[in-house]
Image (cartoon, rainbow, N blue to C red):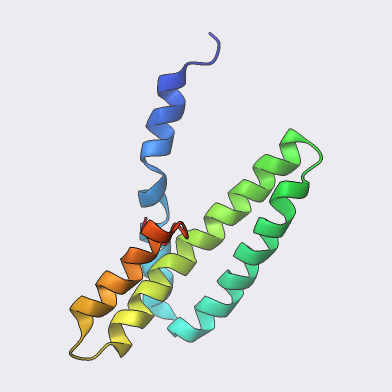
Length: 108
């Protein structure tokens, strides 16, 4: 059957939405501050491991761990910012999503 690029692109197009349900549910159950630090640690460690991967399997594993950490970190950060923005929620949201334009990829 072989590799077909449309399968990869289809999977990639659903990536930003894949963590929304479990990430949102965890945010409903636990305090945001308790979620942000462990997820940040997972993201940092996986970003450090990723470029030093010695095999494709290790690279894919590190990428999956990075995606899982980010799936919980991004909604937690967004919620934390919005809860603490007060009346300035519009500028807070704009500033938070503008980081994507700087290359930080914070806007999923």
